[in-house]
Image (cartoon, rainbow, N blue to C red; front, side):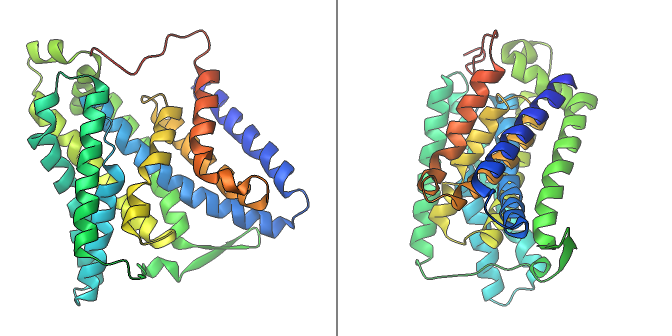
Length: 317
């Protein structure tokens, strides 16, 4: 708890300093709009990062196909709506493609590389991402599209700012998922088994942990998170498969901020990265570096957090 409080203070201080530096000459309502927008996008970074961390902790795979899975989910949902399928059913079917695709890869391809180096596993998932992106590009042209949810039209006023319910929903989902998944990992039998797999796969197998079942659950859960992230990103930011596919980049940065271990740190890192990326838009000098901002921030914070520690992502491999 002490580490979480320290890291929260670190992120809050970094965001506050940047907001004062870049927005000192802007009206408060304008600055507030950028912060709210950044929190919504940062929540998406955090959601994707949570999926990456949950999967990595259970299987040792850093799934770089996360964004592509989300892109397929939102495109399927959009297409079903265009075909006249009732919207809630279309969203549910699109969302279902997340765990379906993730589990298909996790059970069909990933086991063949179970004992390979982490970089090999990551590169293989990147290949899967390009296959999905190519398939989506083949099925759908580059025509402009818009994916909408009913919550886009509902809004509440917070400190004089009109905030859509969709943005509030995304932020709330990220926070609740961190609380729920953290509690599940700490207090349930499946959570204990996932943590055992993360510590030592061979020993877990020897003591009778059902590795296949636990890993399948991890793949399905991460796929569900990727699908939900894709749907929300298509609504809040841009419905373009290539853009959503490369959403995985800031999601990886958020996961790195949590050292591929701590879900609260992933949440704080993702939210802060989204706000900082949004605030950089206020500066004519720094707005061009927005795409690399999440990784620069993650690298700096990771160096600060890991002082005096031995840090490795290689696990037992």
